[in-house]
Length: 456
Ligand code: XLS
Ligand code: NI
Ligand code: NI
Picture 1 (spheres, protein in one colour):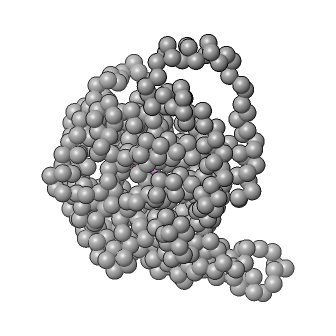
Picture 2: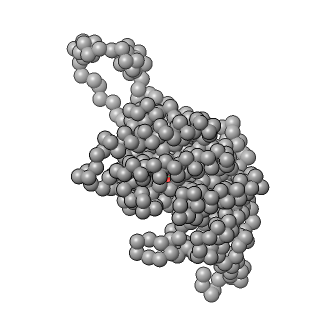
Picture 3: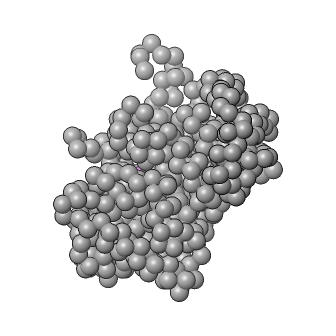
């Protein structure tokens, strides 16, 4: 801000600067204000949680959650630079006291933002001890506090998960490690997290295979590793039943990073894996669009594919940078992308018990505390606007009709038999001999794109 700025703007800017160093957060609850000024980024213009859209309040379509790892444990460090996101509530130690203070700030933040859910890895909330027993007792203390804060604020746990990729013991994978001792460690860690999920009422539980993959096929028995991964999931399903944990299990596909190749490459790969090992009734998918684009697909591809097979359980709503080839985990700020995702969510009748988890981090250059809030408000409003656009598209039914018309030839005759899987090659041969060359029919891509643009 230049020194020529009016006094009121100066006051505004010093208020923002003050937030850098204060907590509990000196921010009011984010209001809904449809006439908010364009630069009022601490109000929702589109997200009106109780407003009914297609027979449900917006908050039921948009089951937002804040993720603990990026938003409360992210430091902004990258391979070239030191941390930039130094938070006033963090004292630089890995103590239980610091973890407890941070958790209180997190629930304060989420309440002011107005989200109803949160997500975390086991290692985000409590320090890892020297032994598994010590780690678990650290977890018990923080889970106790989480349970108390959940009931005080009404914020619920969308899902928890295990960090099976950061500790050096997992450098060669967890469930797919070549050492059975490491596989057992991972299993013990998951056992504890399922118990935590049950205690905190987690509505889902996520498995992201962070290092389940390979760097070179020369040292890797892929078939054994995949069999082991399936058996690991079978142990997990058995324990879930045993303790009566009711959350939905989700696998999160990602093609690479940190491994060169990850087994859970994309939605279709994971669905094939689950069906191969007879696990498809026990799991759905948690789709992250940034992983989808990393796999070489368009932003909404895996959301659409998973939903088409009734396997879309939840979404890690973030985005990559279209011009970068890695997982940048940016806040979703593109209305068209959000509308495309929400269109699929509307078509399948919602995401519950899943939700829209902001697996996103502010840029390392966005170093003020207030940037955390601005980012979440902007992303929630982007999705709320996407929902409104998608609802209008669904309501008009125009694009859906245009799509349906392309497939009319399957409505009767031979097409109908092909569609129902009862046609034969001989019938197809006879049909072509009788009817000759098919008439060329335009795919009309530009028309579809032009129509879509009129809704945005
Ligand atoms: C990393 C993943 C991870 C999972 C949870 O790329 O997105 O954050 O969502 O382990
Ligand atoms: Ni994710
Ligand atoms: Ni990711």
